[in-house]
Amino acid sequence: MTGLVLPPGHGRKLITKAQEVTFKATEAHGSSISVFEVVVPPGFDVGAHVHSDSQEFFYVLEGELQLFAFEPTERTQENWHEWKSPDGDEIVRATEGAFMFVPPGTPHAFRNASDKPARMLFQCYPSPYHEYYFEEIAEIWSSGASVNPEAVEEMRRRYDVSQITQLRYEPPTLVDSEPAQRGA
Image (cartoon, rainbow, N blue to C red; front, side):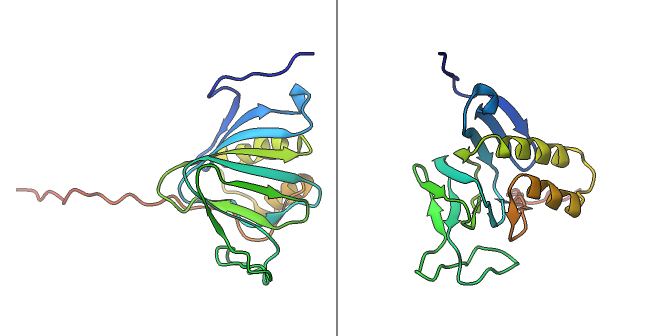
């Protein structure tokens, strides 16, 4: 039997303006879980969602993310950023070394509200739901065409993703620190 060893930075990459996903271990490797390294840019919010069958594991490698994994007292449609659970659970500011486990049926989300990219290790069981999801969403984002919301919703259903709040990518705007030069 032979295992899999990957040096840093190796694995199949899917790169879009909204995410960089590196496939580490997949169904093709014989794995029953999918393992990814994900770079989350500033301004990316995956949106609250739930999976009926999938389990997910998130481990922050560097940077900062906001995380939650609970049923809120109220599911608001605008965003999840202020949600609280009946037991008092709140959104967590997760830095290097933070971990989140999401059992099936648990609403959850992550977002990068900082001004620097974050990097996380993401695992999903069973394989290959998220492998196919990432491949298809990368195709949609890189097409350059406007996104058909009905097609995205149908794709999410195929891959066990029930979206509660909208996925958003609003990169921070850079402010020019140099005063404008006036023409002579």
